[in-house]
Image (cartoon, rainbow, N blue to C red; front, side, top):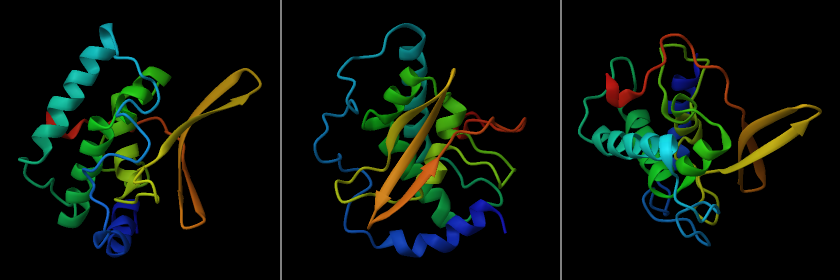
Length: 167
């Protein structure tokens, strides 16, 4: 089975969470630590993201995606956009597809799909980090929930990857 199917199976663990997907994380001011408003091209991308994720709530379910997975994807997309994680990720070099893209390739996941409705004890969906390896900088996200750690490194998007609000 692919990642969408696996995610649908895991949703039962997250569906009854007491923490709202829309509530802000404890200890943040909505900028995810940057404290600065994006400018120029990044500001345009962020406006497109905010408009796009707000439209997701009214969109029809994409064909072949389980309803529970779509609802969780929409909630996580809105959380990433409205709590400053998307702005921080864009400033670090993540692309819009890395953050919110969808594809028929079930082996590829954007950050919003990877989050899968999970939150840590501080209501954070994830923390963005950088790893320096010689002359390379690798961007990744991590979650630490109940002593378990998960990592997500953005992979190159497949040719058919799109932002869902453009479909």
